[in-house]
Length: 115
Image (cartoon, rainbow, N blue to C red; front, side, top):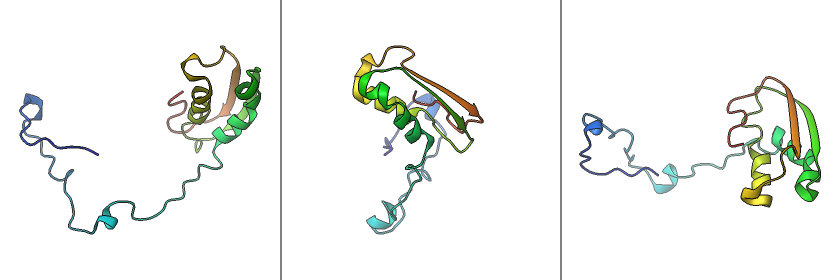
């Protein structure tokens, strides 16, 4: 989804060659876009369990306290739960400490990203 401007005049762009980045292979459209259906293991991520355990808070604003183990394969943990909170309560969110989560273990890449 990057767009290339022909003749970028900014001094920082001098000497940069994006030709390989913007190269379009001579291939049918289908071979370049969506070449195969992917099955991501998103159904069993830790966030699904967090959302399930946080239902009293999400549905009735009741405080919940969650304690779970976390492993380094649990990536971006908290992002989906945060998404549920913002989807339901928008910018107002929930009262502070409505959802308390204590995770023990080793967090994965991007832990807490998008929280």
